[in-house]
Length: 199
Image (cartoon, rainbow, N blue to C red; front, top):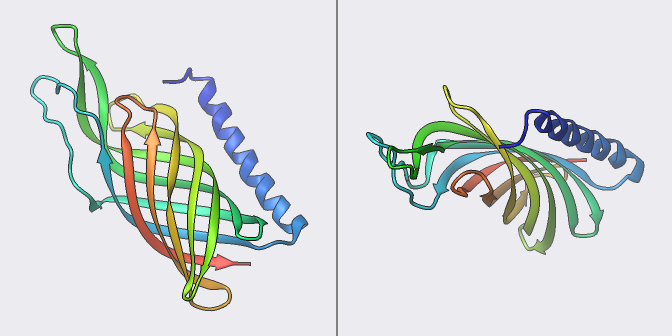
């Protein structure tokens, strides 16, 4: 967990990055787009001894573990986009505890993962639209009621597809694996779909 003075600095950096991207888009007069995606998620995590009286929660993929993402993207080269993306994943959270024997154990509770990322996406033209591969770096905040939140870095990687509806609008899908550096190094798979608005 980062010291309390680091978290506001990370938020400020993410905010300034987003403002800079929006400002640069009009100056560069290149393709920009905004998108919103909704879907489900699955957590993948290493097994650790559970805390006394608790069970480890390792459910499969479920839309009840909802995932929401909003992004703003700017074309930096033909076929290459830079995205600033923010999102939320409803998921079990692993809380680090120490048992009576002095061993580290994991307590799973229902929680939420908030994330902000900078992403590079490479797109390939297809007969029905485009597909893409992407990777980036981000900050992930895990929080659950009655427990302290933790913030750490991570890496999103995945694939996308864009199916144009009109010249400006399109249906987009994405499958993303979020590799986080939080306690027990959880990974979150999200699969989602939504709308894209191009400018």
